[in-house]
Image 1 (cartoon, rainbow, N blue to C red):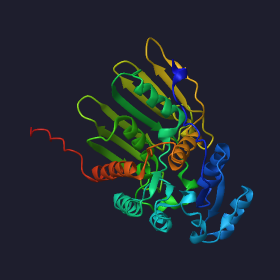
Image 2: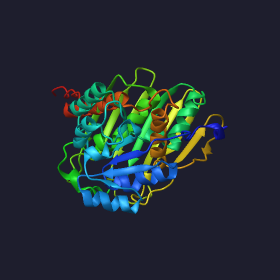
Image 3: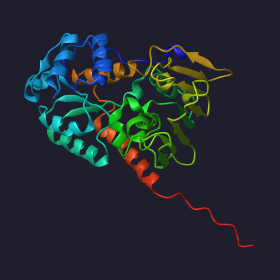
Length: 353
């Protein structure tokens, strides 16, 4: 029965206060509401724009720190949330107390070299760092992973990811001049989740490109992940399907030797309005919809941070989605861009007449 599938991470019996770096929309729209729902205390917020930090802090009943030194004054008595741009991650990690527990906003740097720098800092300072690849903690994906673990689907042999949506890129002006957008900032979630389900692929074939209607460098991607001769895994990503909601899609089809699953990620549909997520399972003769306990946003972050907090207070022995694990997602992203930069295998010309 689908009702026995895990969809959330149990709350810890105790918790540490949270110190947030950054006061942008990801903090106000997701992280602060999540901490309020979880009942975790926010000790304060630091942002280089102090008036901005003060305004956000006042609205959410906490304080603004005037400096990084002040923000790290709790030492190992806090969990640190680095909700900052990739370029700021390394410097803030250096400023954290040795041995601190923290979460780093994705991506883990703008390329693999930055990810490697972050790994080296974390190792040298003994930091216990997670990366906010939170899709794997969404209720639909937790339930899917549990169904696979319980053998409901048998051996997974096919994964298809299909996205055809109209993403309003103009809402994020900073994207205009970035050389890497679609895979690094969006499909990275799908790659991380597939890794969580299947492990690391052997390789990747990819092509990412822009669109005549957009100034963003890349908004469409096709990828095949190589998992050997028994597993087929393909992604078709199009953020320029600007023809109304009717045939938009953001879905995954997962097929096994005993059953199949269908996942709809509703946040991307009719954006920013969005729709509820869906999970359907077919483990016998027909499809059954699983009643979900929430969506990708913001419930996935609830799960992501709860597991980090459980680890921080000693209730979980291991840290899921650690920086060490996230490096492999970044390596897959890097390989996809390298593959995209290479020419496709040539097709032979017709013989001379």
